[in-house]
Length: 362
Image (cartoon, rainbow, N blue to C red; front, side):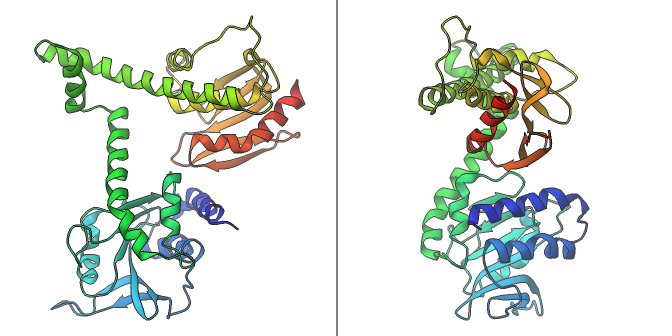
């Protein structure tokens, strides 16, 4: 099994079991040890590779223990501190990691609740663990751009120099992505003021701030939908087997679709991400049928993509209501199989199955 497949399999396990895990020991057994074993590739039962309850006296602190120390050639390489999966890992939980980091040869430290893995090194000061992680891996929402960096930590391809050299960029790029994403979801006053003063020449008063709060939010949404539209144009232009759209077929931009669908139903929340996923499925299906025949219906449990607006002709189901997203595909007997995806682009990996569903119904 490839590294990405093993990571996906563990992510599915975490998604299915996280709610049932209530203690730190259960978290270690269910999530942390499998991560060390199947993802990092170390033998958790070999004390020459993984030392549980690792002890090293630190100053006046005697007998303190780190949950796991990963060894290479007799030296500590990675320190791991665990917390229960019921809470988010916070830097306040890492006091022992800070102390141990400076007294061992370890250059990598990890703080985890089994779901979120925060990896630290010593970028800011030699032999002193940074206060902020250089890599954050959320198994319920995997950033595929981080997979190659996580792989560098594995036994098979462990490359400390490469990890450290890339750590500074990872640290700030990751933090920036999280900050930008937060602003798109819930723009702060500073974010609104920054853009308002770029386009508005008058004084930035309370009335102007209130006006631009909605304008900045709307502009952000339109920017995202237009970006998706550009990506779809590329897919429609380069996708193999995609038939040209008839001249008589009316075209609708992704912005219009997103706006219409977001406003369609106040009881069911249709997200922009669901609309983006729908448009990707639609782009794939257009290789077999006219675009006008591909429709959708949103429900509380999933977002359905249908042929001819007929719920007996499901093309795909988008399960995007949790951190781990799933693409649901149905076989000839209407039995659904959920495929975990970490980004919308992964829908294209299932293009053959999507086209197959369309062919069965047309």
